[in-house]
Image (tube, rainbow, N blue to C red):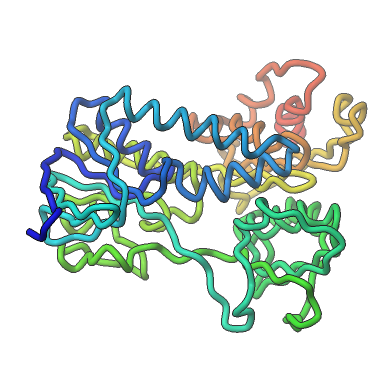
Amino acid sequence: MVVGQFSQDVDILVIGGGPAGYTAAFRTAELGKTVAIVDPNPTLGGECLHHACIPSKSNLLGVDTTKAIEALSKGLEQRCKSLDVERLYGIAHFENKKSVQVTGEEVSVVKFKKAIIATGSMQRTHSDFPNAMQVEEVYATIFENKKILVVGNTPSAVEATTFLSSNNRVSLWADGEILAAFDQQLVKFVKRELSLCKEKPNAELYDLVILAGHRLPQTNSLQLENANVTLADGFIGTDDTCVTSNPKIYAVGECAGCGHSAALAIAQGRVASEAACGLNAHVDSVFIPQVVWTNPEIAQVGTFSHETVAVRWGNSGLAVALGQENGITLLGYEKESQAITGVGIVGAGATEMIAEGALALEMGATLYDLATAIHPHPTRSELLSEAARSAL
């Protein structure tokens, strides 16, 4: 042990302080285990709170970003204290299957019974745009009257393009289909509002280039080989209990391939902590809502590989009254069983309304169930019932 180094023991060590990590730490503490969480940042929250999810949505919605981040950060730190979760500041790497070394203001060795890895993802690189900025930086900077190129086909790329277009000339280029994971009946509403480059543009023609593609997992610094943890396609391989190739170590969130879904990452954090504490917990990732805060918003859950029916928002009295008729509610269903297979919504508030679709799929709802469910009037949510009645 080097001078200034100290050692400690915990039941569960969580590496990474983003949504997946702090969810895992809090749940583990609730279950009565001693917990430490390692993160290099002054406050918990990770990229999601400080640079991505919260800043992007608060800016898009015109909310005071700094105030929101401060309030949420304070809440997370208070939660740590109330649950007696120990905060360790620094970068962790595995010494062996039972301990990590944390390097920060001081060097420490943490011995654990089990560990949960939640290190997230790292910054993007692109050989054609070496001097580009990361999309997460956009929301902390003011741009006006700039010619901007956004590179990527992800929700982050489309959201940034939407946000920046109010005061700048913005073009979007992607090597592949825009929002490929979404049904194109939904995406076409947003494409109308975007300036899309058909061919790879010359970066020199723009004042600024922003990278907004998918991020690679942050695993390089962990020295996973020391803990017998293996990778699968670059991500940490796990099963539906989030356990890795080492039965004492779990992985959650973007480093484990959650597909940049904070919702799935949070669910994985909860499952990993419960499984690590001996509970029978599994991730059910069949129906994960996907959302994009564009204008109009897009949200979908499930699939549309069988029959579909769409109802335009011009059928909604409230949508028309609010000038929000630019949207649709889409249902996917299986004709013979009448089982709902997918729900898609384009329009104001779609990112909130999709929760009903996720519940319908989880509960195995049929067209009849949605058609006869009484919704408040006048609302845009009524269109779910109208779509089901149309299909029937």
